[in-house]
Amino acid sequence: MTFSKNPFCAFFFVALLFLTLTFVLKKWHFGLPGTFGDAARPDGLTPERDRLHQQLKERQQELELLYITSDNALSSKGFIDPHLAVNESIRSENPEMDIGCEELRVMKAVDFLGSGYTKTVLKAVLPQGSFVALKSVNHQGTDMRHCMEDFKDHHSCHELVSFKLRKEIVLLQGLQHPNIVQLKGQCQDSTVVGGITAVLEQGMPLQMIQLLQSPWEERFRVCLGLVRLLHYLSYSPLGSVALLDFQPRQFITVSGELKLTDLDDASIEEPGCVEDSDCLLQFPLRNFTLRCSPSRICEGLNEMRNLYNAYRYFFTYLLPHQAPPLLKPLLEKIMNSTGDLKQSINETLVDFEEVLRMYKSGLHLENLPPLIIRDYAVLKGMRSVGNMEYRCWPSYNQQGCVLSVHSTREASLICNSHPQCTSFSLSKERTWTGRLLASFRSGFSHLVPDVNSAVYMRKVKASGAML
Image 1 (spheres, one colour):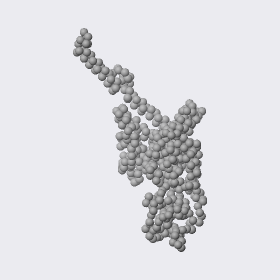
Image 2 (spheres, helix red, strand yellow):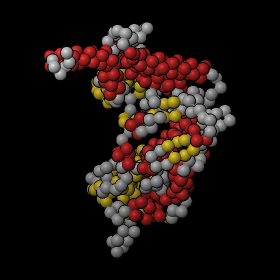
Image 3 (cartoon, helix red, strand yellow):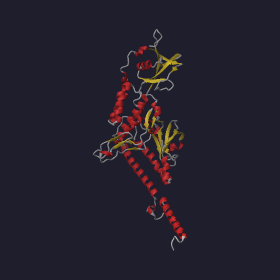
Image 4 (cartoon, one colour):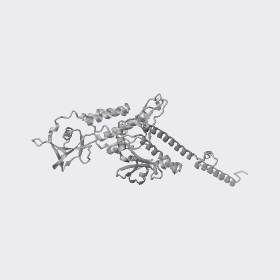
């Protein structure tokens, strides 16, 4: 009897074949126990769980190596950095540096600061009244969600995702610098709310748009802090450190000082190589090739990666615009050398420190007319009230015209260049470089005594015109 003569047999055969294929495919896709294909493993693991366990093993090995490197660095007495004295004095005098699990149990979170793929950051208040940032695993983050979709194991996924935070804690213990956020404490007890938690000094997220509108002096401060940080990372006690995820969002500011706050994607190893082509630095618009050293290491690659990222994310936008004219040649040299990676971080730091020295000392103002201050009558110990303000850019006060000056001569020159300026005042308030803050205005109603202020008024000619 053939299938063509008996339709029932043909239907029965097709149905049996469909059921068999369905069962086989389900065993393959869902890893059902049995003897078919990869689903059967001597250790009982499915391919998915085997992949998860392999990732956990790799992260643990990476962390153990980091622990060893960090312990060796902290026990070494031969490493000295001139910028670390500030951090060490703060650390020795600050009792907030030893916050642990017990303190975290009673700490009160007062605000949500932000979250990313892996971590959540909360603002908390200490018993003394000061604020800190609490960084913990983001259980609703992208990393956790993708892990659960792949492996459906909450405990193992939490352990896998938490490795980034654990790595960051170890790095913060081994890397201490004024431009790296301070680790004030930690807790790795799963019974505490949030589980693994890092306690950090609290700052403000770096806002590039706001920074672009700030005075050049403040923008230069950010760039200088970044260069000092990169110099430290090139010669850190852990080795040359590369910031693989180099973005402005990895930084905060604390009282105007730039600080690196996200280190989970940092690398303390420079790539190995066989030939020069293995030492390739690739960026969207430029590529660079370094030499493969005799020890088969791309020496300096981490440093150059950091330096070029600093150029394309920070220097390009913050450094040249509205800079003092006589400082521009040196700033152009910095821009050209970092944009083409012609200088090391050592040479770049020397150039930045020279810019700072010239700016603080007023050497860039040597050509100012010496007698320009004679155009003004000075009233010391007085302060103007009922001021008629005008706006200038970039100003320390968005509602008026407040600029930093090296001296009364520079303030006089600025006032002469503003048609609406009739007077300016100087107080004892200074910027981070020690320069004076001058307030420029188009008029005022009257003066009142103030021992900390002096008012400079433009003299009027006999014809009634301003000098």
